Image (tube, rainbow, N blue to C red; front, top):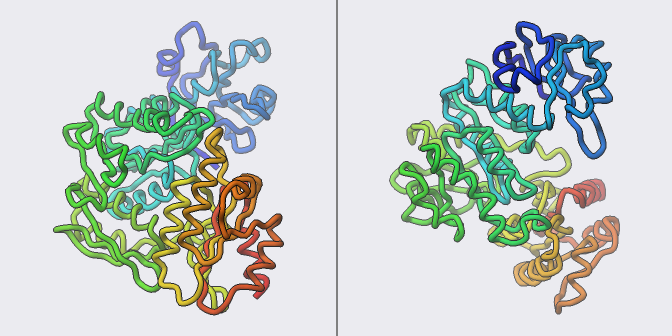
Length: 456
């Protein structure tokens, strides 16, 4: 999936890794690869190691395909010593060093996007907005970790005029690592919410981790884009001298209000700037658009340019699971938000359901939220209570949801399988109903969408 033609000279590699670690290097190598299936002759091959794979098992394949240089773990460097190679303590860190080194060759706006929820959709929309004026590199899909970020940075070319890079975290310290690697000129955090609590423990831990991006910008003289609608983020509004605030807070630099068409398209009114009907769906899309406009303002785009950029946006196809895609199935509306879920994104989805001008019943199908650690039971119980108050029918699916439902008084209907859920909906839905389907990626709730579509 990743490909690049980034060139590194022998002198540069020696400077990066030290003269004691480089052996028999050619004058230069072009392109960096971590996958022998897509490796091109002349590439540097980095033997990454993971829980289920070890690139050192593919060194022979890399040599056969014409790799110019191998980067290997010092502990596993006894083979192929007669081949051009570099020995390192950690091949993942070596990939990061190459990405960081290449990033610093460019003096262009680089926006890093972090946050507990909404990173990928905000990244995609922001890249679209900036891309209407600048040749913009962006992170593919959600490859936002210590492999995906450097591989994205290595795709930078002299033709690029801007970059939008998503950075994610699974454990303390990762945002700091990725911020240093990306060296952003601008940084945006979507929100602070309950994510990866197995290692980040609580909201304070999430805040410390995510705001490492703002600390980097403070130290490097970059510009922070601060979401004033987030209670934990708004206190960072003075993070950097050039901080730009955004949100529905009227005091924000980029302030907006929102209401919706019948089709659930947001109509955004930016104070003293412009008004636009945004051709995406739902409350989360409105929040993403406000963030994207703040990014556009930060890089000097005009109101006319931003209006045209938002109006030209096209909602991506659902591919089974989606991010708040509105789908008509006979005489009912499906809000397909199956891509992923955490407590904050669940609440945004429920708010979208309540804002939808339904003629019939408001129905929610909610599956488990993963990676909440010790907080899982309390978070699922709280969500069930809130969802029951704003829906006419609430269907629950998954071990966490069903377990939490046992301890609270609720009218929620517990289903033991996707098919049971589908059968209930096919029996009980009626003309004008609006059905929200949402859960974590591991729940694969797009199967319910397909069952409803197939059961027309």
